[in-house]
Length: 304
Image (cartoon, rainbow, N blue to C red; front, side, top):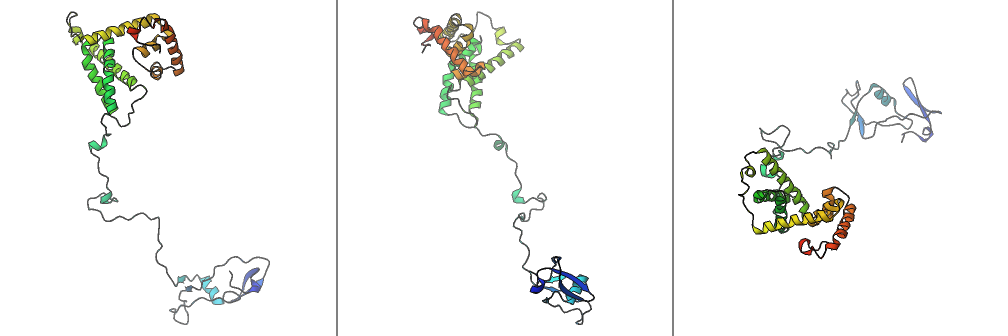
């Protein structure tokens, strides 16, 4: 608020004449002017009667600034604060850390220098196989060995199964691996074993001294009786399905009956829609229904 009398508070204009100032009414509003606060004091007057060492507290007149105030404002005498509340506190200032060692990196605290991770810490942690995964590996063994026999590689059944089992164990032990509960991991195991068989076949083609080429036809490592029976049974089932099923639905029937795939697995394997697989699966049931009683011992109840 302006420190003037009420008669000059509405609209004011400053005008100077000589060494005196007056306050008169005018239609132009007075511009805001800074005036010294009672808590501030002027510096020592230059050439004052007191030798320039005495300070005084600025005062205001009811009609405006005094002539002395105006003269000092015109000369630009600095204002000096009479009170000080201390340094400004910066709440968002960065944290100041303690001293560091002489050989520590510049600008980095010794306690906050990141240490290098060891090789064991950098590798992703693995977990043990669960009882469900161990049981699934045992259940998949006949299925995987049958794939090797169908590939006409009976001499490498154990080696290829061991290689596929190692890959399955490594994949299942990863923290981010989740076993598909719908098929028990059969589709994943099928893809792994298929890759192992393909790699083995390529290696045999590249290696002219492979056991397959050196081994005489009449001398071979015979599998046990159960392996022979299982391989012959699979071949008989596959031939029966090829004769009785239309070509369009044969692959769905083979994957469902021989490989034991679910409908979702068949859809992923053949890269077709699941509803299409369901329609073809119904056609397989319809085509095999007349032979239910005659081939029950060979195929099992495939129409249920």
